[in-house]
Image 1 (cartoon, one colour):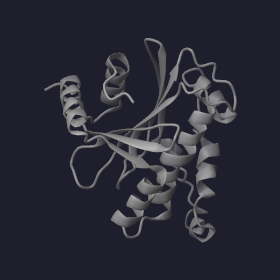
Image 2: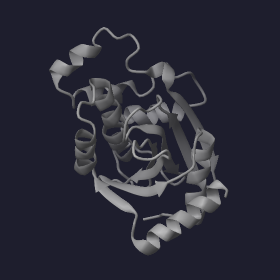
Image 3: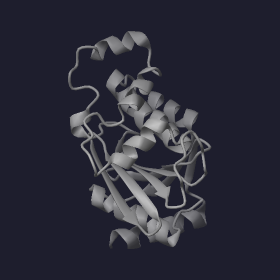
Length: 214
């Protein structure tokens, strides 16, 4: 079964059985703390970057994020989303941060890849993250902007969408998720996706056919 056929079938089943899971920001963070007794400081930073600081910035149209998104593909990005990694550090206990003070490989800029694609009336800004090792770390992130979005600084225009493909320890398959601008985490279910290309196709399928739309 192809990715599109699988997702359409699974989403339809989920909608009929009311199995799409919606979680708040607080609930998702608590789940991470409960499922994994001792996540390290890097684990916490990866979580907060993907699920808090970058997410919040995309809905707000944070100036530094807008500028960086618009530069993808036209100029090298040496320190992708540095401001939002720094913002994630402010959400961590200061004593824990001493563990990464002298780590030249943190933040993991060399393990991140950025790309941008156009599909219909949408721009897909794709972020490949470091390989996850615990739930709910993300394999990939997609910031989706409508062509009608002027990307005006510090203004939530309601046209942005934020998708993640997340690792789970309880299943061999990742889960396809979306954050909305009300801090609700929508879990569309497991999917057989193993590359950023498949992740992109999954989002395009959703945008074109409205599968799983709120």
